[in-house]
Structure formats: structure tokens, C-alpha cells
Image 1: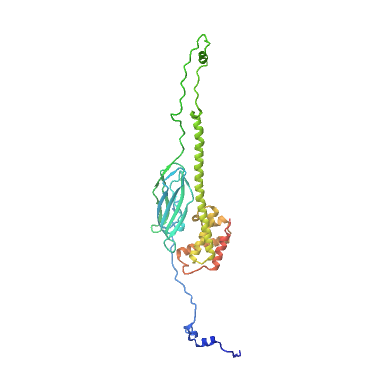
Image 2: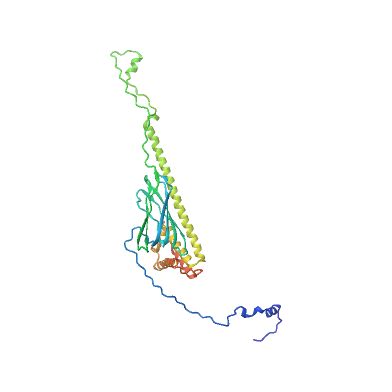
Length: 366
């Protein structure tokens, strides 16, 4: 290419005089070596995975680890039919995603509602911490205590199943069928029978004879002094009070259900926004994705999100075989990243993985 003669600008003179414009300062070791990609492979780790014993108790939900349980109930003084909130905290180390709420040892005479839960982790991988369950129960009859709650898990160090049993929580339940109303001594008594006056053989023609000839006269009893009047007044009042109590109870239960539903919908919307951004680590992202799938299924079936697994999701939304395979991969990858610690080095999620997760969430339509 022919060289053109053009006047130099002041910037050209500045670049010629600048000692740091030399390429050496941008890459001082560029001429000393070259870049080469080398494959690195780790050693194979040998694992011995033992199956769980076959004699699992009926209330075993798959929890493996070492746990403790604390139970409390409030309020302690209620009426028959009033709600009681039972708080259970399970602490320890293990797979908390398989920890379900404890069950009443004896639920006779109790009306139960689905529990809610929250988990507070003490480490980065989520295998150490505490999980709190709140369930609402209502007594259908007089009770003196909330029955014991039981929770079963598998202890890998002892290699057997362990069942935790709480102590009954003392409470006072009042109320029940109201006694039949009775009239006190204020009610007037029946007048004694009057003695018959003998009729004279010959009827005198005066006024006294006419009064005696009418026979015994029954005294007049006001209507408010009669037993039937008070029964007719009290019976509707009892029915009205019962109806008002039932409506208050239904309103309380409806408010709790509405708050629980609104909380799940709020959590679901928040997770979807975070999944669309995808600016978190793969461990957090796939854990949030699995939680979003559980919440969407729980909202569709009105069940607890903690009881939702891959088969429940597939059966609820009628997924195809390909969608079922993507769903299982999502749950398996979430468990793998949570318990193995892999993926902590990656800062963000690949676009392809994020698109697959969002597409799977869109396909979950009832």
C-alpha cells in the first residue's frame, strides 16, 4: 500500500513521546510463552450406598440424619371448636427437604388443617438447621391436653429408625352442649283446688248463690309466668348464639386459608421473577426452580408444597414423557447441587439451562 504524506496531529506526537505506549506494558510476558489447553481429570471416588431397612414405620417420610423435636400449643384456654396453633420445631442435621410435619398420636375428637413450614439453614448446603411447622387443630369436644406428636427418621450412625414423641401439651377446653333451661322458683305454682261448695236444696235468689253456682274459678296466670313462654324465648337465642359462633369460626379459618394461599402466591411470583433474571449461582437457581414447581403444584391441588414430588407434579398437570424427563432432571440436579456442593464456583446459570427451566414452568398448566 502506498504511503501517504499527511501532516501529523498533536495526538500523533503525544503517542510517539509516550513511553507507556509500547506493547510491552500491555502484555509483558506475551513473547515468553504460548497458551495451551490441558485436560485435567480427578480420581474416581468409591461410594458404598446402603439401602434403608425394610421395616419402616408408617409415618416415615424419608428423613435421614439426626434430629430433635420441640412442641408448643397456643392458646391454652379455648372453647369447643376454637382453633389452636401447634408449633413444632425439628432441629438437627440431615435432608430437611424430606422432613414432613409430625402427626398427632391420637387424633380422635380433633379437626385438623394442613400445616405450613419454614426452614432456617445453618450452613451453605442446607443440611443443618431447623424446620418449623405450624398446624391448626380444633377440638370437637372437651379436652385437657393436645395429644403427643410423633416424628420418625432414620439415624445412619445407629442404622435404625428413631421415633421422637413429644409430651402432651396441657390445655383447657370449655363449652359443649348447653344444659336445658329450667324455670326457677320465681315461676308461680298452680293454685290449689278449691273446695266445692255444697249447693243448697233451695236456691236463694240473691247474688251469693249465683257466684257459688259457677263452681271453682281458676286463677289467671300471665303468659310470661308460664314455662312454655321461656322455653320459646331461650331456644331461638341458643340457636342464634350457635350460628354466630359457627360463622366466627368459619371466618377465622377462611382468613387463615386466604393468608396461606396469598403467601404461597407471593412466594411463587417472587421465585418466577428471580428465575427470569438468573443472576444467582446454579445451586441457588435450581433450588428455587424446584421450589417454584412445588408451589405451583400445591396451588393447583391445595396441598402442602413439602409433600410435592416429581410424580405428583407430572400427574397433576398431565405431562408428556419428555416433560416428565425434564422434571426429574430438575429435581435430581437440585438435590445434587444442594448436597454435593458442586456448582458453587459458577456465578451464573447457562442461558440454555435457564430457558429449559422457564419452558418447564410454562408447561405446568392445569
